Image (cartoon, rainbow, N blue to C red; front, side):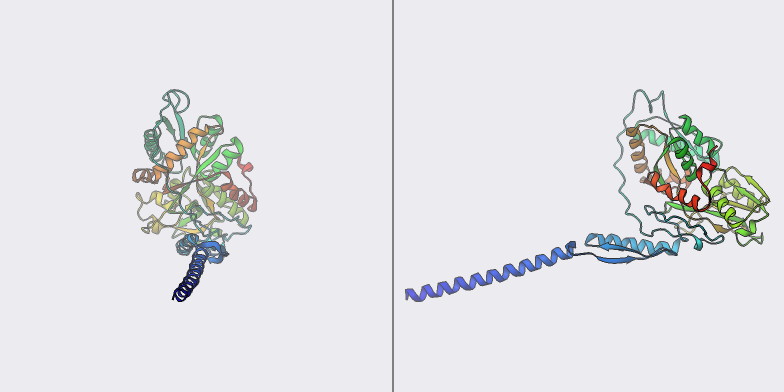
Length: 411
C-alpha cells in the first residue's frame, strides 16, 4: 500500500512539474510578443504623405511613435490641401529653393517637409523677479523695438500692451518703440539702443551678419512657421501673372522687407521683369493701398493661407476693415518661394539669463487667451517656437540660388 501511494505521489509531482514548465513557456512567449509589439523588433518604415510637389518621406514607426507619425501624416495630408506648395507647418525644416521657381503660381516653388513637429507644452507661469539695478530695472529698462510693417499706431499700441504684460510676468521693466523703417531697427540693434527686436526675416539676416544679433523665437501663423511673398494687382488690370508687371509701376514695402521686396525683386530679376517705376510704400498696408487706389499697377506683400474661418490672411487683410471690397478689387498673380517667418531677436551680448526669462515668458504668454489676442493684433501671430540662426540658412541659400546675397543690402 505504501509503495502504491509513493508511486502515485511521484506521478503527481511529475505531472505538476510538466504543467508548470508548459505554463511558464506560454507566459514567456506571451511576454515576448508583448515586448515585440511595444517596439523591440525592427521598425517597419511608413511612407508619410508628401507635401504637394514634394517627395514622400520615409519614417520608422514603433509603438507610441506610430501614433505620432499617424498624426503627422494626417496633418501633412490636410495641410497639402489647405496651403500652396512649400508653405510648411511649424517645426518643419524648409527645403532649399531651386534656381528656377515658377513666376505665376506656387506650384513652381520647392516643397518642404510636410511632417509637423509635435508642439512643445508651454512653460509654467513665470515667477516675477524684479531687479533693483542694471538691465531690466526701472532706471535701465529693456528696450523692445518693432518694425513698422503695419500702421505704426496699431503696432505701437499692441507693443505697449505686450511690454506691460511682460513686466507683470517677469518683474522686468520694458520700453518700446517703432522706428520709421526696418533699417532703423537694425541699426538700433547695432548701437545697443534696441535690446530686443521683432524683426522681419531678411532684416534679421542683416542684423545677424552685421551686428551678430541672434534669433530666439520664430513666429507661427495658423500652424505654419513659413510664408511667401505675393505679387498683387487690381482685378481689372488685365495682368494675369507677374510678367504682366513688366514696364509697370511697382510698389515695394521696404528695402529690407523679405516678402515685400527682397524675394520678389530677386524673382523679377530672374524672370527679366523690369518695372518702369518703383516706389517704396513704407509698409504692407501702404503697398496694398497703392494698388487698390490705382497709384501702382503691382505691389509685393506677404502671403499666408486663409484663416481657419476662411477669412484672408495675406497682405490684403491689413486693409480689409477700411476697404471691405479689397478682396474682389485686388488679386494675387504670383508667389515667391518659401520664407521662414519673422523673428524675436536679441542683440549681441544680451544676458543669457534675462533672455531665457523673456523667451519663457513669451512662450507662456502666447498660450494664454490675452497673449494670443495681443500678439495676433500685433502681427497676426498665433504661436511662437524656439529657434536659432540655422533655421534661416535656407534664406541665405535661396538668395544665393536667386543670385543675391545679404551683404549686397548692407550699407
